[in-house]
Image (tube, rainbow, N blue to C red; front, top):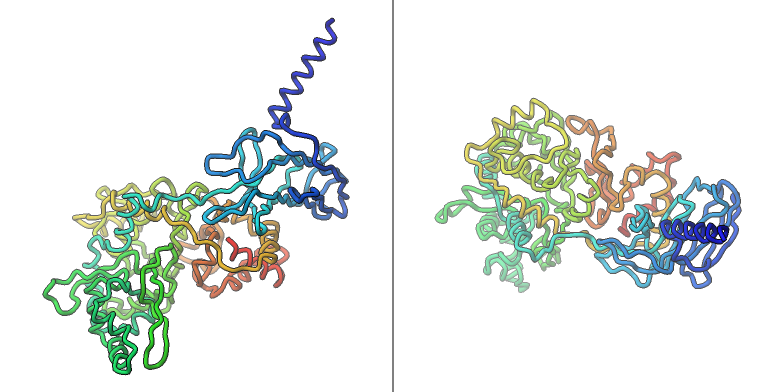
Length: 564
């Protein structure tokens, strides 16, 4: 009786091997169709549950596409929700390869709801790993690109990660973001900002991007702004042209990002500091009736959504101060939403690289997911690690905003999370820039970090769905994803794109920015803000693809970026 025993053992080994490969739970094939290598083609289940499309010339030889449902698939990962059935897709005969990615389209059980992201995941052992290139075709079909001739797929929903915004640390962090100067009023007052603000008309301030929190506007000014009577219009026009109104708004704490530190008895501004909110916080505009007609002004409730203040022309404001000196033309030339942190106007010029390189103000969102993808913070990709956000904030508060700190010095709040050691010229200047009595604390920085980690990108606005799908395919098959390689469409910590226009300390390259929500953040685009629209930004990058993307392909990629 030895032969049957050997047969049973062989059968058991085969079953065990199949189970290890995740095949034991497969039912009968849903369908099996032949595809020509030269022509390619599409095969689809009768109920539309799964579709496989193979482009012409992708197969190494004619092959059958075999699709089988996995009856008992492993559960989704910790940060995923299974959103439909699991499908095993195989190409027969064995040894067939794909030189171009095939498209796998899987019907999800429902549509993802923001902040959920619909993605296609593939099974590796008992773990589901999301594909970097996924797209949701409305309402609930999830597409993915794959070059694997044998793999198991399912639709999963992933919720954008964030710290609970209601947590104590996040709430404290928002207060730091909005109102904490860490003593930088000494620096900015010395530069001449307080004296400047005493002469600025409100109408000129809002033209430079200044935001006004309506909840903190003094009642008399608020009532005047809302009075549309003939007499009220005249009063309103006068108030907007009177620097005394600016002084009153700053003293009331209504000018976002500007903090009055003057003595209570001072009738003018004698000492003012600034906060992160100046460049990183918006209000929802209010439409007011003026003598010249209706105008939407940046006076309204705070819009806490992570969008940057792209109207803020901080360089031009600084150019008007007495301390700007010979740098005034340079500062005035930066333009809205741009700032060069390596400028002599920073504390003691500690970061000065003797090159004019203003870079665009980034949005504040999706940091937990970006950190998980190894995202390097700062346009130079300098900050990385557990406390990268807190460390970067310390550098900005101390070295850019003039706070009483000691970044990268023994008296500093947090050990810098730097990917490289700063040049000797910078290290020497840092010692001279350190405050003898630092007030920046690790607790405040980590609270701020938690608040920044609590914000996620907004839901996409309007876009052309059909063109967006074309753009998704173009983006992920024509080279764009070579740099924007993660599910957040960022680059990893070593992915540096060299841009000819960058000089000084940025000449070594710029990190690859994340693209989720970038359309919602608003123009300008690219590291130096040279693109005034998404279309211009895509056209600028389109030449990196060989051959370059056509106008039609570029337009489709723009719609894809709007969908993120």
